Length: 371
Image 1 (cartoon, rainbow, N blue to C red):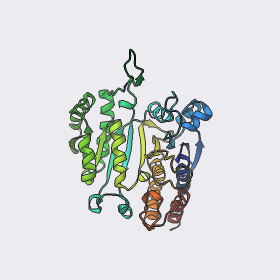
Image 2 (cartoon, one colour):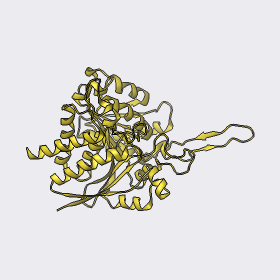
Image 3 (cartoon, rainbow, N blue to C red):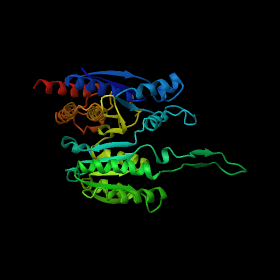
Image 4 (spheres, rainbow, N blue to C red):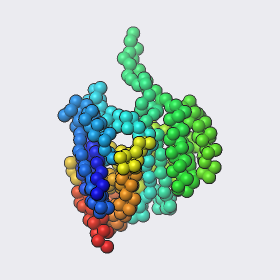
């Protein structure tokens, strides 16, 4: 019987709460598929800084390196750590992405019919929306050097600098990944940049134009990031695959989460070229939301994005397509049955806790196996 090893890095804030539910569902889905899974927990983020002296230890990095996938919660957040410290919780995520070469972040956006009322947008705008954002994950402003605050001298105030840098190879790698994804969907790709201002974006657009010739079956269009932000709200169903650089992707997907009604509904998969021992894609899987310190420990966190991230883990890193589909159907079922955490509940709807929502998904998954 095949056994998979998953590194579980719950992190800070609501990370442990939602990751616990995702891990329970993941374990059940793997068991139903006739396989076994070993979940290996480790500290990350502020919890790791306080206990181990670093946002992610060498031992935890080694665990991730020898695992089939990483199930991640959240790190950082308001009130966590010292903003002036050299050790920041988010450094754990940056290192994981860079050292594990996870250059492609996939964020699927597909509103649930039963949750249309949870969004601030009209039902007619949300009808038929099915898009995925492909975000470049290991370059751009988040990694460019220098990046620092410089103290003022001779009576001048302090200054700060951040550096955006991309190579042609980095851009081509993510663009080809997005084109390949588009070929398996509706064959429409939107490349998002800021080519009217940024040199990195002008290079980005040049690479997209060159690479597009290798994918004649895919319709290509360019959008400036500000225009894309507007179009995502005005006509989101016009999008199929969106590909963009690191920071733009970070911002646009937070906006896109509102199409589903809440950030608590959006999963993500961070993938690269590395293969697991079982021949599948190694990846890191996490909900797109943060640590939400204002609701930590109150049972209010929505675990569905984490559970849907576990479904992506089943699909990409374990190759268990049917198990992934079963988890996604279980989520759809509990939503259709009216289960709501506070973030997706409308006035008058019954609200359940994080644990209760997780248990409902687990119950629906188990019941589907018996049918």
